[in-house]
Image (cartoon, rainbow, N blue to C red; front, side, top):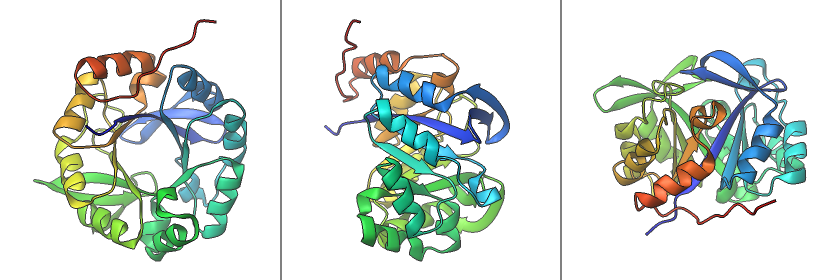
Length: 258
């Protein structure tokens, strides 16, 4: 039975953790470092930081946030947003990131996936895909935080990304993101069936039953959570214990008493 990873996704704009609905209407939540530390203390398996306006403004403000995070958070960090070159990746790894997530730059220049994979290893290269449903079992890849169309089939893009060297796929349903109405299971299933590398389901989790469906039906390897954690609907411990009760193979974790 495969291990399922619980991942906290923290979207960042400037110095703030933000949350929107379908990647729009961003609301300030607080200090991303404080939220990362809270989720670490609760037993999260990994953390994903995404600078959601970095590609739009062609800059990334996450280096300082990542450096501060690594002072007291000791789980794998994936960082995305505005990373456009091997040098950008090197800077982010030196700041403390373990992996990078690339969306816009990879769509504009797919060879970047191979360059990063060759230089740092495929385990470092996460292909981030923002997908919108455009028909029955058909999704289009978007970039610039779900603003720009590409005409690229999202599932075919996942397959090509794997062939170019991506070691993992972060698939975000723009339609479901921030709605807490559940993942786009058909999308997750289509991507999981197209590639042999791990798939992280993102966008829409509102309850543990959504996680269970993403695992059992969608065949995802991990889930990225935002809404349920940031708004205090559930804790990481809640998710972990309920997932285990549903026979999902999550890591056992016990919070040590202070």
